[in-house]
Each structure stands twice: as structure tokens, then as C-alpha cells.
Amino acid sequence: MKISKLLLAGIGALALALAANPAEAQKKYDDGASDTEIRIGNTNPYSGNASAYGVIGKTIEAYFKMVNDKGGINGRKINFITYDDGYSPPKTVEMVRKLVEEDKVLFVYQTLGTPSNTAIHKYMNGKKVPQLFVATGASKWGMPKEFPWTMGWQPDYVTEGIIYAKHILANVKDAKIAVLMQNDDYGKDYFGGFKQGLGKDADKIVQVATYEVTDPTVDSQIIQLKNSGANAFFNITTPKFAAQAIKKAHEIGWKPAHYLNNVSASIGAVIKPAGFEAAQGVITAQYIKDPTDGQWKTSPDIVEWTAFMDKYMPQGDKTSTFPVYAYAVTSTLAEVIKRAGDNLTRENIMKQAASLKGVEVPLLLPGIKINTSPTDFYPIQAVQLSRLKGEVFERFGDVLSNEAASQ
Image (cartoon, rainbow, N blue to C red; front, side, top):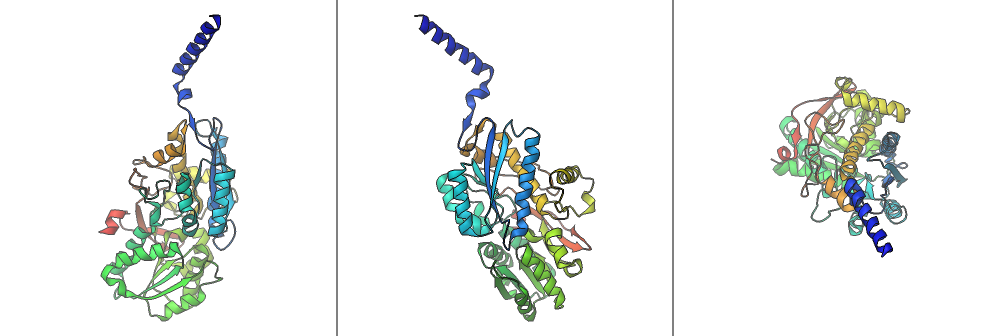
């Protein structure tokens, strides 16, 4: 009888404790989460032809060091585990399997590249592990019905391609269009959107040249495109090849209306290596602040980002948009984790990622906010065109949305 009374007293005390601290009763964890830690997995091309993007992974790592120095998120430290996949899809598969099955991460975040993410797309959804805010704008990352565990972040390539096509039709007289594209899903997605934007005028494309990510240069392709007589050029390339294309076009005296895809529109990683003189007039689409643009110098978020770079990435290139991008997207992820609270299940992480309404994160252009829903996995659906003048990209026109582009 005494034992029963003690047991009942213990149960009563536990109930009172849980009532006083209901969060204790609500804690839920999947692999990769505990009272003290959240493990997040990532792959990046720290080596190979796309290694210019490696700074994104390094910036994310530095961001989480900053977060941990401040006590973590909801009291938990972030353990960011990142591997080099060299922009090779088979290597991505190997590394992501390790992250999920051996490292037991809660989710995978910012895996970079369309081919790389395509290689793990079905695996991640089969395992029901979030493939969150992937570092690619392919349109396939916004298909919640078919792939409920995968979500993009940046504006999708199809929308961006449509916007360039419409601008060419409106501004280039008697347009004859040349296209340079990477021969994979990344290049094809941009090109598909571009043709969609041209519509009945798709026959204005007079020459298409492709390259493989393993090619040493695209010099011969640029000569071929110039010889086509094109007066407009859509440059669908990753940073190394973007710089080569800009430089070669200048060397051979080809001066078309030049449109450069956003993922390579970096002053530090592309324009500087190509040469500022060679890149004058290049048009791109922006959605994040360019750190080289003096108008943002006193903006609170740029001041905050600059202080972060000085402390956590002192050797980092403050003229590159890649660390800006990494800071902005990881600020979005930090908000998702914060909202998840003590329910750190994979299902709740996706639920919170798909419930962002008008969220403002640092370093996005004015008027651009994060919006998602269970049926909308495209967090950013707006861009603004800009043109290189001197050593900065100058924005012009209105902020253009997905809806505006498809009209």
C-alpha cells in the first residue's frame, strides 16, 4: 500500500512538473536532433570546375559558428556536416547516403547543383528526409505533390529565362539570339524557360552552343556564336565558364546584348576575373543585395553582414554575392528551425518551411519577401533586372514576379 502511495505521489509530482513546463511534454525528435544539438547535412563543390561555389558552404559553416557562439537556436547548437562532392552526381549520392544513414542528420540543406540534387531527389523523398532550400533554381524543386520532401529557395530558372526573353523581344531590334548552355538539367531548365518566354518568336534563336562541366574552356563556342551573326546572347553558365565567355567575347570584338544568368552574376567570382571593361552592359536578374553597390553601404543588414564577414570569414571576398546569398538563405533556415521549437521531427521541419508568409530576411532586395505554403514550394518568386555599369550592377525597372513573367 505504501508503494502504491509513493507511486501515485511520484506520478502526481511529474504531472505538476509537466504542467509547469509543458514544453517538456511536447519535445519530439527524429534522427539528428536532441536537447543539445541539431545535425544538418550538406554537399558542396569545394573542388572541381564548379569550386567557385564552395564559398557558399564555407559561409554557411561560418554562419552556424556565429549562431553557436550566441547559444544556438532555441538552446541547441548546430552541427553542420558538409562534404565535397566536386559537382559530381555519383559523389553527391555517396556523400548524401553517408549523411543520412551514417551521420544521421535531421535533414539535408543547400546541396548545390541541379545535376547533383537530381541524383538524390528520389532517394531523399523515399527516405522522407527533407532536402531543404536546395542551391539550384530548377523548376522541379517546387513540386510538393510529387516530391513533398524537397524545396527550393532562389527564384526558379524558368521564370528567370522567361524574363530575359521578354526583355530581348522588347528591347533588341531585329533580335538574332545566340545561347551558350551547360549540357545538363541546369542548362536545359533555363533554356526551356527562355524558349517559353520567346513563344512564337523562338525562331529568333539562330545558334545554340553547349559545353560539358568537364571542358577546359568555352572559347571555341564563343567564336561559333559570334559567327552566327547574333546580336543578343543568353549566357547560361556556371562562374568559371561565365568569366571565360565574357572575356572571350570581348577579345574577339563581339558585342551583343548580353544576358547572364543570376547564378553567375557575381562581381568577385565572375566579373573581376573576366575584366570590368569586358563585362560592361551585361544584364542579369537580382534578388539579393550586391555588396559592391554603394547604395547599400549603410543598410542595417549589409552592416550586419560586413561585421559577420570581418569576424567569421576574414579572408572572404566581400565583393562576391555568394557569401551574401549564403547568409540570406541560412537566415531563412534559422527562422524555420526557430519556429519548429521542440518539435524537431522531419515532418515538422517541412511543415514550418512550407508556412512562411511575408517573411523578411536579411539581404534580399526591397520588396522581395519569403512566401511558401503547402502547395507553394517556391520561396522567392521575384527579381529585378540590373545592368553592369562601371564596377557595379545598377538595377532598373520594376520588381518582376513569377506571375508577371508568365503573362
